Length: 285
Picture 1 (cartoon, one colour):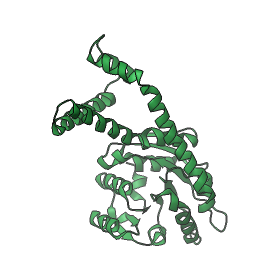
Picture 2 (picture 1 turned 120 degrees about the vertical axis):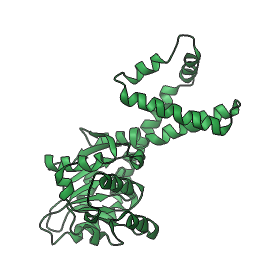
Picture 3 (picture 1 turned 135 degrees about the vertical axis):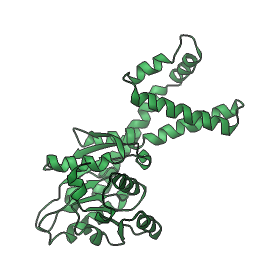
Picture 4 (picture 1 turned 90 degrees about the horizontal axis):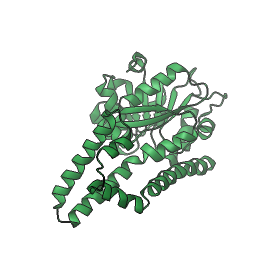
């Protein structure tokens, strides 16, 4: 955690799960909650934020007016209106905050257009794609910096995400943020779907649902920990547990026969393409 982040005034536009996760991570790292503003229209979410101990408001302008770093944590469909409102609110400021956008699919071209002040100034922007395991401090985030973002601003953005992410990766091209969306942004749902079907299959074969659930959860937790802690590649870890003509080999052969590799490839591509489509469609709206 950088001293720069500890000294900064932070604002979150949107008080949903991801904002709550990041704020929780910042708090755990010693960031003063009174330096954090959250604007949130829904009373339930706003009350949850108040209980955390941060400052809350229904007004985006009030939350953002003194911010050094601002996180846009709203749905892609409302990002344009939020950005235009903020650009108007900063007209009298001599400096603008660093913008962290976690709005899926919304491109830098659109963000620059919507955030441009009347005098032509454009805030520095970093696009980020976190994922929901951030809620338990085990997130993975991809970041891409707009032109003009300084090394100290990149450090600030990385420190913010590191509060909830165990993997924080800067990508070389903006288009790769959509790939991050297809991989780790949407990835937890693929993982949950696999566990869901493992449980169902084992239950159909005679285990109780409770037994199957406990075994599947721990199996996936253990496998994930091995992936993170081992120096071996995933392919080698797979080979390590696969005896010739054994039970695992039979299961993996079934996967291969069913086109498992193509199924995964198509899923990641579909999520990536949808992120690209969101950016194109919403950028024109």
